[in-house]
Length: 481
Length: 100
Image (cartoon, rainbow over all chains, first blue to last red; front, side):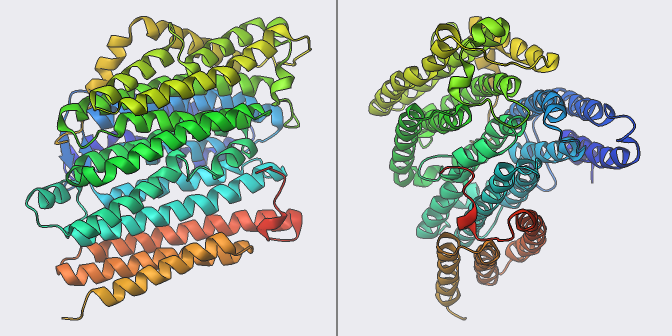
């Protein structure tokens, strides 16, 4: 292993080694010093974040092209590390309240994040598959970490069975792509494609299977059926992380693999993406209207947002808009991450010890009993909807602009109309909180309220400097795409 | 040389059987076996193309797949045991505490 190899994988290696050490320390001292594991987990993520910030501006290829460091991987690494820190903060309060005392929670979280980071910097289909497993397997366990509750147990088994099926689809797809090009290196495949040395039919089969597999991971319709159940059954702090991390990692793989390898067959794939994106937006938003449970509503909303992000990517075959579409997808991912983590943190604060309290009607009166939480929730709902003065608005603005630039005006119109539908269910939450009498119970977990407040301030604050964040996202180039 | 198409057709059939098993069977263990079938169908495709292209990428990939599949089965069986302890059944029809 050369120094370049070591440097390029530093954020991941730090995280993995740190998590292993934590596992030991938790066994030895975990019972006596309960704060040790969460604090160490945050420290590990901060270190990893520092390593990834240190990489900014670098471009490298390591381990014989297996690992790629470029703007894309660095942007995503930072996103994963930050959302991991938030998830640990949320988890600390929540686990104490519902009586889960497992220190493995933090260790598994770190392993999962290391998988996500690896996914962002994958330069080879082997790494894509391995990191997919590395991020998924800890998440299956995390979904069931509240193993005394039926809902959590079932959620984990459902997630496991359907997630593994998705992995098998990815694998079968990779096998066909390998058959078409004779190599598993992403850049090697690009080269083979440009030299016309590939079997077109095998490549199309492989890409369709990969699309189905990644579609599961990002929860695109018609591969979304696991999402509401798993989001509903898992402990809320886990869902908060899952809704951001797993989705962003799925998109990382989708964007990198497709924009590098499958631009030559984009003519065949674009209609598929078009239908997938439109279906996801429509089904996600329309079904969300009918939900009475806040967790399920947010699950369908996360499906709908996957549809919006896919919209950016419909025109990936067009070299003129490709960089813009990657940038706007990354921007939307960041905006979505902040908003979604925020909304789930409010949910963590109102959830009761026995797992109840997450019906929308349970929020009645929250505006009086917990004004700051309610105000934060208003910000998140407006941002999800895409109302100006929130980050969500700029996210949608850039997405729609990219879609229209790429010539997909109807898709942008569909996005606009489904956003109008979404106003209904997001604002229903606001109406419940402020205009209906009730005694909503919010827990006084200071950390959770603090996180919700900080995220709300970020969602509003960053909306005043969207260009800054967009430039960061636009620096998230994939080398060679 | 041995025609590539035969093992590929076999792999596609195995993969389809796996998908059908996951979607139709009710016993969690049988579903897990169907998933393994899907993984091994992919292995067959890899080994076929590794032979066809005369390089080792595909064979290396299979080693990784076998290791991760083992890890996956370990986690999956643990989850199933956890459910079995509480419910005394592993039929996925009995899992309806989540509506959906």
